Length: 110
Image (cartoon, rainbow, N blue to C red):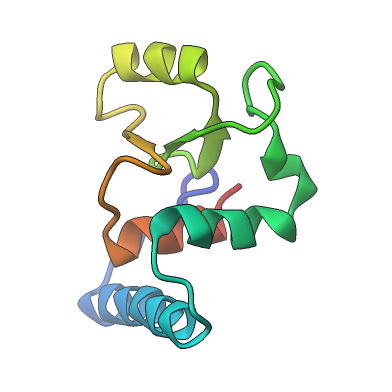
């Protein structure tokens, strides 16, 4: 594990990690969560520290660094993007499509 982003080294670990992410999506759909935005609202409701930008503490960040498992504001998302995707892969909470493993990374990070 590097920082807050878990790394699976064996194929079995990767499969288990992805299955957990898929299971989280199934739970969300069963609970009526049908979008990434709604998912993140529910996730952040239980984690007050995630309701502010990790870098500048601006309220209600609408972007996330999947690589680091953190939520950031628009201004800080630009800084993270300038670092390159190998350092910080940035996604919009509302406008981008999210893969199950990315949602799982955000669930484990933060």
